[in-house]
Amino acid sequence: MKRLIIITIFSVLGTSVFAQNQQAKEKIESARIGFKTERLGLSPEQAERFWPLYNEYRHRNQDASKSFRQFKAGLDRDGPTEEEIRRLVELELALKQQRLDLEKEFSKRMLEVISTQQVASLREAERDFRGILLRRLQQARQQQVRQQRLQNRDQVRDRIRDNSRD
Image (cartoon, rainbow, N blue to C red; front, side, top):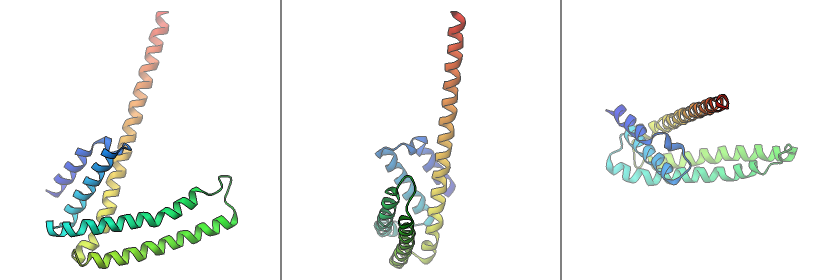
């Protein structure tokens, strides 16, 4: 039954999931919620309390990464200086510590909402969902490459046909 639900969720998403538009992001988020709710076995009461807490955790985790990404993006393209490299290493270590502290804080808070087993299963569910999305992305890219190859082949065939008529 669980496999059927998971398969249904991802089949509904289709290859359009990976388009960079709001509708696709909403579909991904709906699939994420459905997948994790099912995987953790959340009751409706637990889900009602869990999702706002989990979303806060995700947003704070993303915010923690911003300064690191911004600093990294601003590095000299010709090669970072020794000072920039040192600062990058410091920021990366600080980010890891910040994420660990955040995970500790939210694990405690989540234990007030869901069971220990569910908290332990959460990381695995996150990893599995990410893996499924990556596989779907790879499949979509492969399909896009195949379609492009077919279009190229058809264009070459048409050119040959046109040249043979001349």
